[in-house]
Length: 246
Length: 253
Image (cartoon, rainbow over all chains, first blue to last red):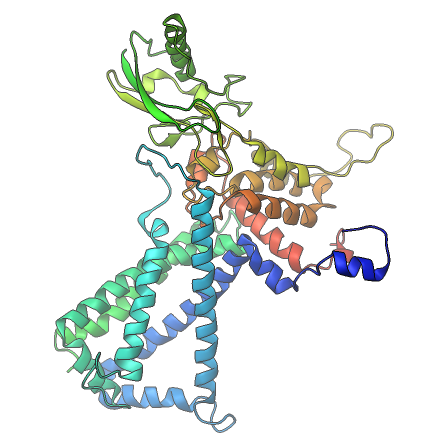
């Protein structure tokens, strides 16, 4: 930056820094912050979705009514399906940011490691399986998400040939009665639980919520959340497999 | 005791390196790890070979000069100590010990086991200072400092800048070092004027050299001074504040 010179001089020689949200996102700490916030959005959705799933145990009518009710949220103030679409757009934006930040940080971190790695197998003491496989558990969840939307939301014929729009209960059973699909759901829940177990702890560090008095709660919170979500979600595929939902 | 060594040898910054095997015979279990290397080097010198080059200085764990990756652990199998405070009694007779330099793009090898850690200096240059009034020396203890804050600041100040945090990190992140340097100044009243500017400047320089923190906490266990990742959370928080806070109000409560 030149200290002297006319206004036009400096305007041509210096580039204006980008506005702060972009500048913030350009930094790695900023990306981690965005990952934490979008992760919280994701966890919020995942909790809501899990609670909604439990309507399956009430029977055909209740789960179908619940699914229809989601489209009616906000009526008559907002048009039908308006708020559900706002939510979907928000979730999609969060997902895109989360995934973009994850991949750009992973690539940057691999560069930072340099070309020559350690020869001896690393003796990790604190890093755990979940923390070291976040990118892979994330990829599994992402692939599962694509499958799950095709299977039970959009009803792609190649994925779920018996899909009928609006018949949530029947669609669910038709899909999960197939063994490979059942396995896909179970594996994806395992990956999701691992991802949340590290993520729900890690997000406190990334946004800087740290108080030695309460720090031990953070790990317990993540363990509790991951277990409750995994158990809550797995009740449905297992319920179908054992004939409780039929 | 007799041990076998598998050591990274590299002629210079631009040469390719490789592992070489050496045997160290008749080593006292009470010898320090670096003394064991000294003995091996004397034998190598006597045999007309190039001795193994490694960094060391105070040999009492306070300077941060030494640092070796020993059997896949920074500073070796003993926690809370630097390489120089590690003794041969921690190893078993006949064991093969693998010795490598710190590995990170920001820490290029200069020779054998010595790496260039000047990236740390670049971080300290932009934020590792406080504003001090010139003139006659003021009375001691004029500024009250809460005891817990003083202790927390002192814990961060224990950082000796050895680089074990970077060496241990699967992402080669320099977050623990930067957070310790930022924390030890920013926890004290004297460090407040530059606090947010410090966080921003140090993080921006750090990210030019190092990877990002994904909260493995591996650095904390590798640190010879046991510096907590709590400081990383504090640094992250101050960095975010540095992006949004109204700095005209800096210094106000």
